[in-house]
Image (cartoon, rainbow, N blue to C red; front, side, top):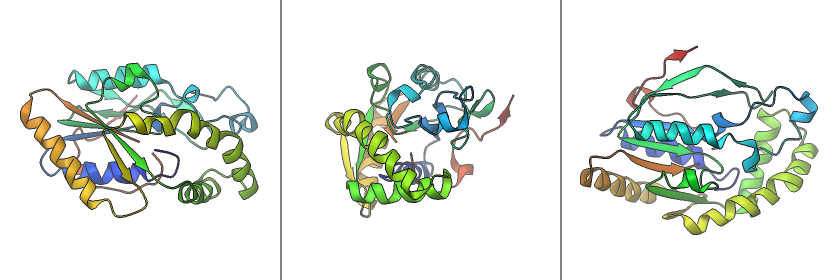
Length: 227
């Protein structure tokens, strides 16, 4: 789904429900942005983080493949304000379910083929725009005028080119502006049925923006710091 669609909120709610009966690992695509520390800060603010060229999809694919094989990963740590990616990060253990949530998780075919289930959060543009502007001003240090200019020049074109088309290859398209309780229950049922039919690990792909906490003690592989 697009920026501000409510993807992270949905992914975390899904993880919380599943974690009552399954071990769950939640991986966010935001952590896999490329390291732009070699650029000046003004130059970094001009980067279009809503396009696939800003994401290290090779590293992301390798980590999802490791989790699929039942191996732990060291998830990168990314600073979304100053744009460096740190070498160390939390160790993530594989779970019965792996939820990969991010803005463009379907944009690369080699990555897309790793998912057993693809979910698109479909939220009206005016709702997403309001959420995006509020976040950019509150968390990213942009002025309102700068946030609007960035949205029109970079975010909107990337959405129309790379994100909106992925709705057509999703198994579920969920409205992101209303209560998603029934949709959550339907998807939980699908996932648990799939786990019951196979010994293989199952993977769900969603996508990031709003932050909603869930009980991390219920999530597989408590994060341990890694150098």
